[in-house]
Image (cartoon, rainbow, N blue to C red; front, side, top):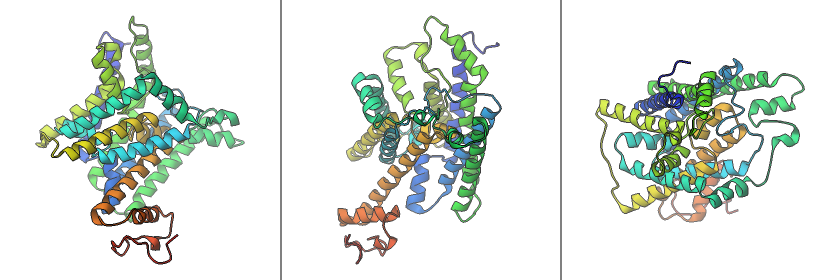
Length: 416
């Protein structure tokens, strides 16, 4: 096999760098951001970046399904086993909620954080450093790792108990269907989901045309996620990993994978402690590629600006946000990219739950911050009623701020 370098691991890492560069440049150029998608939707009613997020998921889902159906790769065994039969639903939900809250407090998701670092934002650099330290503690401290892997796995659920070997939607439907092969169910399910997402994002803004930047961002990011799976899961990528595994010091972090940005933050710290080529992972190189890609775009467009904290309170908020993102990303086994894009592209049920938790956590946090800013005298009871009404868990007429009344009392008939 012709190699770019004599070392097969370096060849694989070169692909990771190119994938990261493309992701960073596209995200910077189109303002693609998962937290920004939620904040625009919640605070201004603008669904543009949410539509871009949905489009990227649809493209990745369709791309992965078509390539897997064509026998290019098999994602039943990946570095993060998204499709595992074990189903620790509490981990997915709790981790997603924590990450969603954290990315609001830290001023952006992991995508935006890395893009901001490339554009000179030292606040984001600090937040990502906190993500890395937190994630390293949960991954490499045995007691913490045991707590995450065992305690939060309760209750112990596995689809193998009902003779289903994987948790992705296609496998679940194939398991309960009397006919049809697993491969056919996976392809059909993925194409239906991708088409449904396209219809949904088209109807989100009353069938208005998407902005060009959102279309480019959604298509580009979806294709980059697919490219990550293709490079590491294809016969070429698997052969490179197999050759590298025969080395005297085999590399860490092998296996089919696409982008994720929490675990690599911890892996960088491990690499700094013990520098070795075998500790340079696909995730680390892709993450650095995102920063360099965003930096290149910022320099070309004249947007590079060094920025720092303006107040200690801002420093504290970013620190708490980084702590929650690192904790949530490890608990949920992925961030808004790792689970929200890479995991979701496999249609793993756990990834979809984690994605829902991320959106819910961000939604609730943004709403609380909004109401506290607009109605500083409101009571906690009013905030609770407002959130429940926003989530459609109680009638809309019970919303205490629907008439912009900051009295802090729910409307008549909603005292319960």
